[in-house]
Image (cartoon, rainbow, N blue to C red; front, side):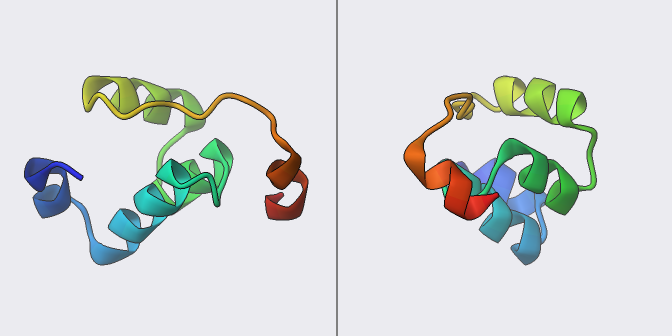
Length: 64
């Protein structure tokens, strides 16, 4: 994770972002943890060049 992003996020938000990047939580759960609307979060992710996990996979049922 980028140092600038880490500096600006609380530990809880950093953990949520890592969980999202690892595919362990959904975009909606990340938005909740970040205190953002999903659409605003999508913009934020794009601005920080963080790939968005938009696919539905087998593991998603277990994480929902």
